[in-house]
Image (spheres, rainbow, N blue to C red):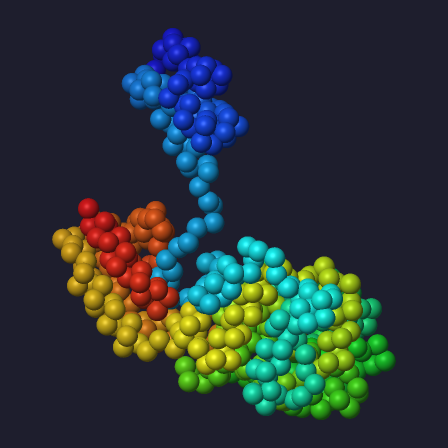
Length: 469
Ligand SMILES: *Cc1c(COP(=O)(O)O)cnc(C)c1O
């Protein structure tokens, strides 16, 4: 396009004020207010200027100049849409950090709904009419869960924003300006943003590394104890595993050593299962296993294997927890009523034995035959000319930095298109509403229905059919 044609188009562009006087925009201004519509109009005109600058011919942009109000409306809807959206998780990773980890149980959503939209007794004791503690709502439930799991008596639990915050609070409370002994093999980075050495530094504790990456002996810990030692720390290795010539002391041996030196033993469990995972072939240590083995304080996440909201729990001996509670950092890291509501309902589901009402637990325990039946039904439902689809064996992952070695056997729907690559199919599914997140394996689009809610199967089949066009 020559510069005279461009100049002509620029001239035809209205100013923002002129555009806003277009009567077609009046209903939008009434509905969304002048500020939002003005912003959308500005964006539309800015984009059009860029288009004119780069357009090859005048007719590419000429039409757009004619119907700017349509562009403003579509820009307005685009900019006022939520950025945070529900997606269908067909990756088979149950606790997918990028996809928000554990979906909440219906009971948790209802409890949020009932309490968070109105006033509540969050910090109000309904018996005495005096100030209460926000901990009380879940403290008693944790107590009940642990006493039925034969954990030692005299335990209490407090809740902070996430497990990283729980570790920070624990170390800051017991070890500020003192040393904490930890094995080199446990100085892990989790999910790219949680590094034990960095959290320790921020807590004011001094890291005392012992052993080697693959082996640490109880004598390594013993030799490192000195008058500045404030705690022993064990960290779950979460998303990586050391195999072969490797070893670390039993947790009971560490507990005995800690006791001998009157030091607290702290364990960052990461996921922290409240539920016995042996049945799904995972040897992920449970919270009560650690407490029974003599750990003084454990920390764990709320939205990993527990299946609840994002939160970090500290469960330990009463006296230790009392110290954590009076640390000003606890106030800074505290959680809100939405979290307490979701957590309380989730814990109640455990106490009632309603494990399958917690989506992460249900997905974890889903028999693979059920997944195969749904995969076969999905293929049957999906009419297509250019797609070949089959059910193949595969593996789901627990994720969330839990149980690195235990993948769950599953069945996958593997899809291949005559005309499009696996990557292209994945991109198309991501553009659906709601977006579908899937992966590519050996050139095939693969869908793992373990993490898809059964009521989403129907919709998924419709989306797959659109890949056929
Ligand atoms: C996941 C994990 C964390 C971090 O937990 P968040 O709840 O995400 O803060 C810390 N330590 C271990 C061992 C973990 O697996």
